[in-house]
Image 1 (spheres, rainbow, N blue to C red):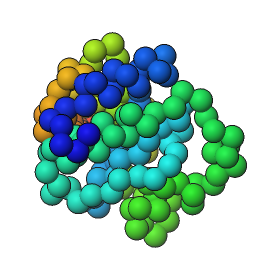
Image 2: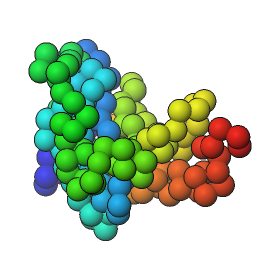
Image 3: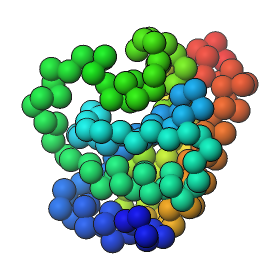
Length: 169
């Protein structure tokens, strides 16, 4: 996947094997991006952590790499994990899970049919469905996926700045 400009073939094949759309998560915390693989609805396995200054190409490659690792069933060993075992938290260097969650913007990444959908919102937001989103082709080049990640993060920041994620807004 590293030398390719996109991951269309790998993503399409993985969707066929799993008979499911694929999911991954990306977090922005303290000027770092952390990409995580998803099993059913929970994160699992090693994460990819990189500075926010990483190239769009590398961000897109990381996103696709984690989408391809999606598994539709939750492994048994994940059920016993505690918050402190959360790989994204560990990679963040945050002093506590509470501090990590409070300063976190999450991007949910999901394939649907022939597209990749990105939706960003603060992790701690528990209100109605409000997010900054983008839709791309499953065949989008890695650099476009990385650029779209940056755009949804910036759009989510605007929503935060205008206090639209607060319950009283």
